[in-house]
Length: 216
Image (cartoon, rainbow, N blue to C red; front, side, top):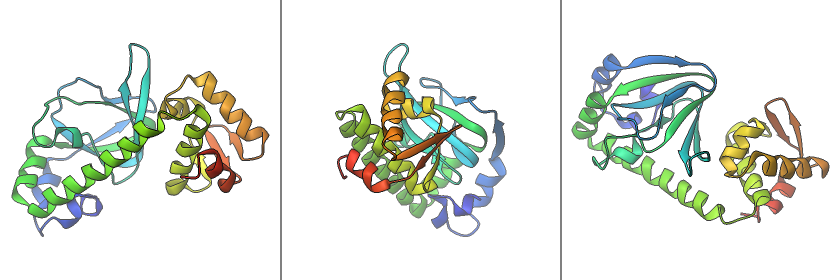
């Protein structure tokens, strides 16, 4: 599994054995916290199955969902490469039953320092995610309905027309009050653009959804 996960896909033969030997498999129930913002960060993580939501706190009672990770995706490290912080800068929560591999930092950063290919792939991965977060900041200036449309279209690229997402998860991703997001979702449903089910949103007309997002 690690050999098929960026940034380890370019690791030299034999270099992954020490990392795999130190790995710990962890299972989480839906809604369980994997780590929380401000907590000391002794490990990097890879999703094995399920999904992990990455949240940041905006105020005492508000959170904003930055990213969602699925199988064979690395998380919990990009904000720490370079030694800028020894604490997690966000909160990771299991969305549905989730299994993840915990990679102790000592093993991960040892490989990072030994392998130029792994270091390069790690930096490229973090750069792509930074661009994605910058788009999220830009999109935060839009209204709720365009932001919701962008979120659904983004999920569609990995999941197809049947998107697995609760309405509360969508509200966290959009960064708005759940009631406001529910109204926007109801409007899309009334116009025949989406159909909602238990924990799912089925996209019926992605072109109309793209128009709602501003066509980006």
